[in-house]
Image (cartoon, rainbow, N blue to C red):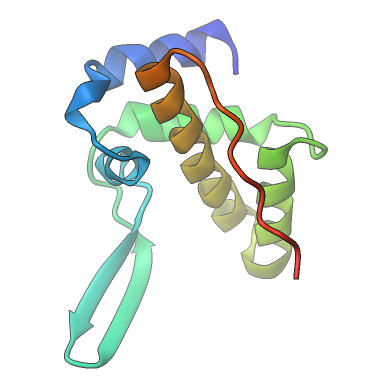
Length: 118
């Protein structure tokens, strides 16, 4: 991620302390799926797209150019094989938002645990 996209994240998110978890930031950015639930029936839909359009755009653009050998690139490509390119990009963008959350909160990006491959 370059300085322009980083500046877009910092300017648009503002005070990171208003978010307690990375999932709240992802939801605010509109990168979480719609969720409709009634009794025992659950329907998950497309991403909500509610929240900051600029953060969504910056996350998508940053993930598009990530090399395939990186953690985000592997996530993007693995999901894209199963569900399509755009869904893979959104999944990796959600992971990037998690890294942005920790970077803004702790002033360094910590290494997130990797999931074991099945």
